[in-house]
Length: 288
Image (cartoon, rainbow, N blue to C red; front, side, top):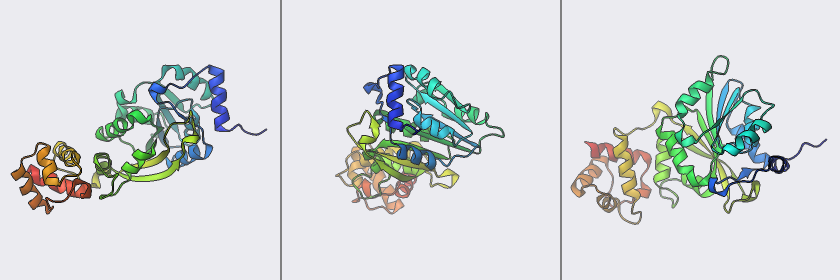
């Protein structure tokens, strides 16, 4: 007997449970078998690995993760999906589902707790998920700023966001989000996914990105708060020179000019031409 496709399975689950996707929660279920396998493979899971999934939906990616990992913990906001997940994941003894808002979850504590359920402990922790587009940036920045102890993060995001995450200095997509994420992680685009791969189909195409934390060896600013204020001010007026953007963003002109000279950065450059290392040098010079 032919195994049902993921698309057929999702439609069957929706019909069986009388469930309808909620637009206000940005629910679009990935129904493409190849894309699901690519995401699960990119996680690099083994029987000693922990996978934390954000927004499991009806559990199709959860199942693929459970077949590879020692433990999977899925965090789902929609309470109506909890009984659906209990049904679809009933054959997996290594899966736990938590009904919670990922933005309010203490993820470092959750990873420690769930990893301890693997015999001998988890040797790798991965965070994955098809992220709701309307809160993609808060989720990603929140994870990074919390110091989440993950070896990798594999996310399905809007293609436009993926382009911004993977952008290089000098490109139109390079901005605050790029600098913020690359301050913490190496970014790699895994694959593009068309809108037709989802149920229901969103209005935009998507892409899978892999974020790998740089660890203790990364270039760090002396003052993270000052660094991020500087980055936001620099990009607040993209068409202006860096010195004009910074003074318009609340920094003193003489102080900014002195810092740029000390950091070896031409005041006439624009923020979009600066690398993360450039911003770190400028921030450290600004901090004295």
